[in-house]
Length: 245
Image (spheres, rainbow, N blue to C red):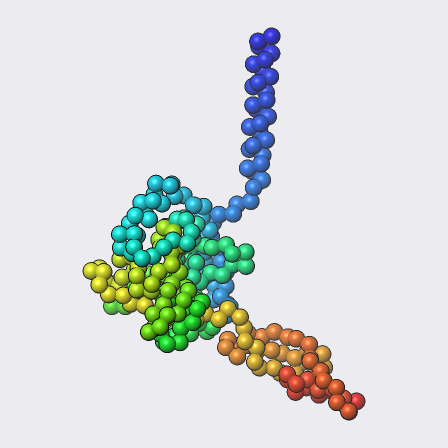
């Protein structure tokens, strides 16, 4: 009787283990590297990574940032799922954030424009630069303008390393994002990335559609004529195409 009970328990555990392995074997692989494109077609690579921070590590990061920037306050928990560039530049339809390490595809996009401080609006980006070792600069950190204050001052939302998402004054950042190694100089630039095409050039293609081109990057698409009737025919005010009866 005891032997039968042991065999029954062993068989039940085996079935549960087999079912568990089957479930995990059929789960999609959601973590890895993915290629996307900017609005003008520049390819960039992102990493989607599972958070691997322990609660103690998150608190250590919070303590580290607090000693340098006590005026900043966190908006979301610390995580390794995304970084500052991924938060600031990658706009996912499902609001998923990624780890992005190279923002040159965005900075070099024809839809990205560098701004003066007087031109900055909510939603624009700020990029902090460091020395690259070749008498030049390299992007260290990115954030999004949350508020425009008087006197060319701004509040920024940005992700700090593997720490939390913070709201802070644009000049109140950890020493990791200063240009030099003495933590005494901030170098930054403001940018506006228009992630929508601006179709402003229309050429007739045939009696049904006209060609639309983005006035910024030249992207082309087609749409139906927007005909308006007149006594002897129809006229499309967008492209000037006329059909006479």
